[in-house]
Amino acid sequence: MNKFQLRYFLCLLVLPFLMASCGKDDDDDDVSPNISMLTAGVWTGDAIIIEGEDITDEILESDGFDWTLYTTEFEREGTYNESYVGDPQIDGIWEFQNNERIIVFDKGTDKEYYVVIAKLDDNEFFYVQDGVEFRFVRK
Image (tube, rainbow, N blue to C red; front, side, top):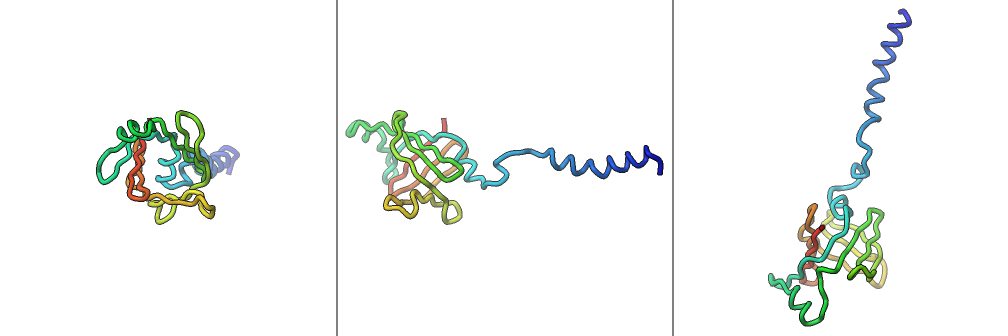
């Protein structure tokens, strides 16, 4: 086999390995779609629903609390933080349970609580806690 044929053969042999290493290098490859959606940015409060009724405006009028100024951000490493009008309010740890339908906050602490996810997609995140549905949107 002459040198040209040997080089050609080696190139053909190495080419598939080089192509495989040029794939998409994205952190999304190693996490579930729910983790990707939940941690893709900041969630902003949109509505508070009790027994099918939106009480967001009532809370604003009676308590002066504007749910649309409340934000939550989840990080992939399992931390979260919540803010109101940009001021930090709560931070801690979170994790999924029950096939990623439940989020447990601050597991193993005296502040532990959980919420049931009612909806999670790229633009909306709704969860239920103690019969109250909290709705967030990504802006």
